[in-house]
Image 1 (cartoon, one colour):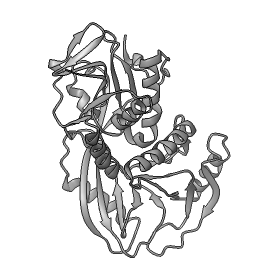
Image 2 (cartoon, rainbow, N blue to C red):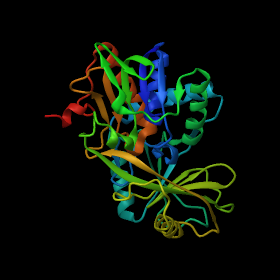
Image 3 (cartoon, helix red, strand yellow):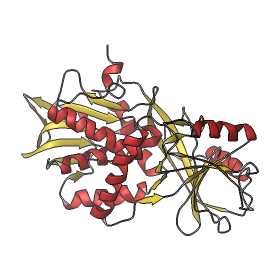
Image 4 (cartoon, rainbow, N blue to C red):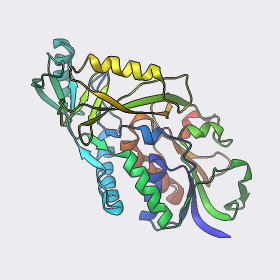
Length: 348
């Protein structure tokens, strides 16, 4: 029987973040990942410390950004690929009133380091932005597709990766350890994303699901070197390609792309840019979200060596390393979890 410190179920942003926390502390582990969840694959990978709809700060933004920056720099060296593309976000203003709201927000202590106080004039003939843009600092894009692909290859090289579908029903509790098939572990961490709805141990937690669809377009004439945010986001990639997204669907729980989402995104795009473009790809995935917009982190009330790391929502690239470190310290050293993320907030 193989003995490890941890079994991890799921290899999206949450799972990878926890794997790296384990490797940093010389803990052994095996990951089960059957590729059933695609929220991390379809994520645009944006990191942004500001909620641009209301011009308010993201929870723990500075702490998350500091940790995430070092985390992805480390992964780039480990995997030998570029992951972190540091790009400013330009928020398109729809009116003079929005400009004034931006100025007011940029004076707030929590936001003054993230919001430029200047209005940037639009000089791109193909973008409709008569009121200009507000520039958000310390933002960028993580290439989540490359991250997942190369990290899973890395896990295979260290014999820590399985593509088997995890069968919750066959997990055995044995004193202070867990047994699954031929593996004995001290702890198990579920980082299953939307797959949590099939997890009998944590199925009562209030996980909401929001399907998102993203298009990839090619627009050779657009030529922007920033992330453009309006009713949609437009993120520059390589070779005149851009990610365009994202939709929110609270009813459809499949990973299938839809014609309706494509039409919605293209209609919003045509209100924003006027140059020719071609749609070259469309992807869909289910985001795991929580009603209070905080992750689900903690241990099972009856099994303290069983934990969950989920509900990262739309800001997984930022918050993943932050909450993974908290969970590790909680399991290994008994450090208390922050009350905002502890699943005890939903338990009687």
